[in-house]
Image (tube, rainbow, N blue to C red; front, side, top):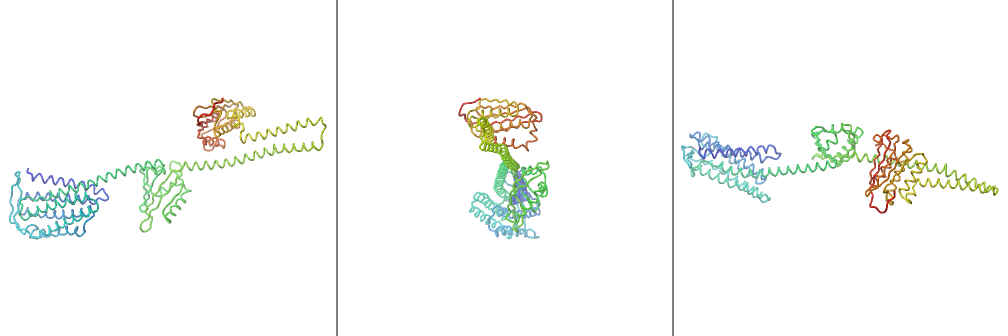
Length: 586
């Protein structure tokens, strides 16, 4: 084995390896033309190296001429693929030079397909074996050079001019490294390889053709630059994946789904979050009809009208609709996006986002329902006050006025006046008590004057006496001074809770505990009456329970209402307290 039988196989292997790698890259990338041209050039160089090695080992003139013909063809293909690679990869250079260089090289091949002469030799006089260093031998030929061969070398010269021109333009555009590495390498090694081949053709140099090694150096330079592009693409892909992960995290945190509909192919791409919102599996394929079937039947026409209006206007749409998922869950979706049009003003793409607004819609419905309940409660309270004022105070005052008129018209004996005045005094006191009761129901003055503990204790005592129910009150470490909103909140909850015990529980006893620590005020009202199903009535609570929850929410507290049929009811309220401003009352 000599250096000839070792060097060329190594070069062939290197060329094939680089060619196959970039062939795979070019086939997998959308913009992989440069990689495909590089792969083709590398495979051409590999075949050229095979021809060079076979020519060096030729055993007869006929065999030598046959391999020389293939060598000429591969050399022309190298010029073609190299010019095409520079044109595509650089994106610069004069187009006529890019076509002239391969044209001249290929035109020179006409001589190789004529019976006589051939491209390199007009006729071959003989071949001989020449020994070189390392004990290696190669085949050399003697003959008359064909002048037609100058056309091929003219093509090589034009290729050099084209590469230099393209490199200079690329350098001026700021791509210094690409222009220097690839342009400089191609210029240098094509010049070196072409000169060596020309000297061999003219008989001035007795060596094998070594053009494949010059082209191998060019391939290495081109491969380095292409590899940088691949690495940059991989980095961009990594950055894109990271960006997608961040976007997915952001959209998931916002409960936001993204979808893109291709109108020409009737295909829909959607994020996993969007699929989850509409009840589609991650790998499930669906079209617009499948999406449309997920919409609530009452909202489908509105969605169609909104999309039609977007097509007829500026392409933007925004709407809210309901979605019925396969599991039966109903969601409210807020969707917005835009429709993209082609040059013919035809819609081709729909991009949109979908946001789950179910909680907001439920809150709006609850607020609307609460508003209605409050209005009805306000009107009912006004009617009650009107009845009490008319049936009690108004009639009592009218009767007192009539009696006073009669007394003035027919003055009684002095012995009767004292008794009548006592009756009038009693009636006036009753009227005063009624006015006081109504005033207390509207706003407890005792709460402001005596504090929360005294007001709650007084209310519980009055309620227990009036309805024959034993109410145990326990107070511990309750501050004397509380913010007005917190004191009124707890008083109204005690009022509502104990009245519910009287009205609904059928209990004979109840317990109310009010205590505080350094951080919060804690209230508990419990009874052992009939109770109710707190889970079943959670979405349809009475106005009293709703008002308690709203009052606690306004003071940033927490309330829990626990009850079961036949097991009584327990109400717990916890409200954070500001820093202590005074002592405590028990």
